[in-house]
Length: 213
Image (cartoon, rainbow, N blue to C red):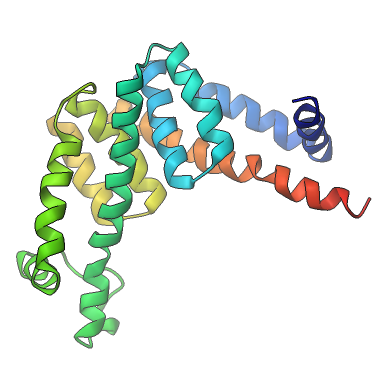
């Protein structure tokens, strides 16, 4: 623990202006606003599983619990992250199908149509049939309500950078009662977590730097 504190201080000393600005940004993002602090920490835990940052997972899991999240709520948030990663991959299969058909120059993101959905499904029907009940189970209300799950999914989709996922979860979050302010705060949590994961992993770079000092 002492070594970890020393390493954190060394990181801060190498870029003091940036770390101070970062800390102010982070505090602002996680303050209660349109979303309460518990919801923000649940989003953070889920996003940390997409950025695959062990530092972030270890930091935000106990913070979520301190803000009142149960173990069941945390695990359901993590499952939303898992579904979001899979959804982002499958959604982008439209680009692969378009390329398979020789339409790679038609546009970066093919238009989402029922025909494209059918083409994707026909190429791997068993997997799609298994995916649908999994996705339904993830997004059905349980320990977490559907609105919170959609807000988590919206944040996740900004980390997976899935344009169609962003559009879909924005619409669904609205239908489940999320305000524009709540959705934007969820997105800012995603942004903070992406930056945080990069900075947290600077510990690895520091360890390598120390070999040359």
